[in-house]
Structure formats: structure tokens, C-alpha cells
Length: 239
Image (cartoon, rainbow, N blue to C red; front, side, top):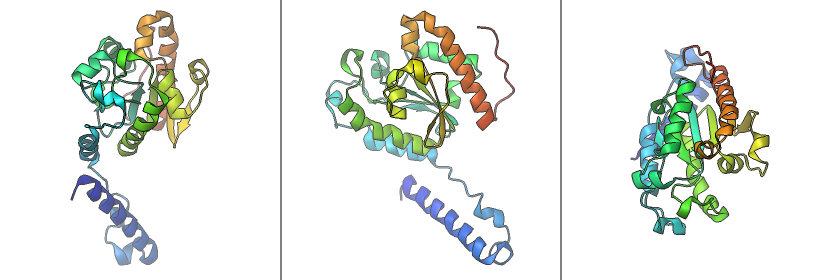
């Protein structure tokens, strides 16, 4: 029995116990009725790893023939904050991990500015393989690869998502609106709060966008604190 099947059994058991408690009352059915609502599924990490193993040899599109590594994603499988980028670049393709090059180093600094560490969050991309020359993902590539990301989101169940760049934002929110219009607001994706900002790679080319990015991540931190509230009190310093 794999972890997905175990997760399904636990969820069905939870639903059954809650139903029985409603029918018969906690005193008759359960000595400790909180059992009906406090069953957790501690298998998200194993489920995520099983999913990675199942798709890591994906051959659905031509990018499989040009990649060095399949870049699944990395981080905390129980993260309340998830970051979504566009696609792996050269460094990510070589190492098999997201955001490990210069853009990744800048991202680490951005996260540190709002008191987040890599091990607290989960990072993934719309595409799992590097497009040649770091070109934009093609619509057919997005269509084939997006279900993988959506399933990752289902497993991780983040409370807040930060999209990095125009493409990841437009794809997740199903819009063609420019990033300049999508920034500055809190969007909704299946009940998850979404905030959009510039991709770190774009910031390296356009330093003038660092100030609006700082505004975006401050908003992210405020929204995170309102929804999750599991971090020490934070006061932004001048950047």
C-alpha cells in the first residue's frame, strides 16, 4: 500500500468518524470525540516524494530530450508559503533544484528580508524542464506540465502563494493581464491567497524593479501573518 492510498484511507476514516459522531453523539460513539476532528495526515512528504518518483522520467514533450535534470521542486512539504516560478534555468537544470543560480541567491535575500528561510517554504515552477536558451514556455508545454504543479499544490496545501514573474502569475490566475496590473492585489486561487511579484532573474536585469518587489513581499508577509500567524512579530526595516 503506497502513501497516497494510506492518505485516502485516513481521510475516509475521518469522514466516517465525524458522521458517526453526528448520528450517535460523542458520548455514545466516542469516549474522546475530538478524535473525529483531530486525525492528521502526516504523509505529505512521502506523498510528494512518491509523486516525484512517478513523474521524474516524464517524456510528454520535447523538453525531455534537452534537459539535464527534471526539476521537480524543493522545500518543506508542509509549507504554509509556496513560491512558484516559470521554469528552470541553466543552473537549475544542471543541479536539478529550483532557484540555485544568481536569481536564487537574490531570492534568498528577498526571503530573508521578511524573515523566511528556504527550509520553511516550498518552491516549484510551472515547467519542470528547462526550455532551450531559457526562452518562454510554449502554451503546449504549459498545458502538459501544469497538472504536475497543480497536484503539488494539492499535496502541500499552502495557505499563501507568491508567484514570481509574469508567466507564472498569468498561468496560475488564468489571465492575460500584465504583471503591472496583477501586482499590488491579493488574488484567490482555489481558496489560497496569491500575491504576484517580479521574477528574481528580471530584477537582476532591471534593478529599478527592486523597490516595487520590496513592496510586494512586505504585503506578502502581512497577508501571511493575517492568515497563518505562526511566525514571530515582524517589523520591516528600510530597504
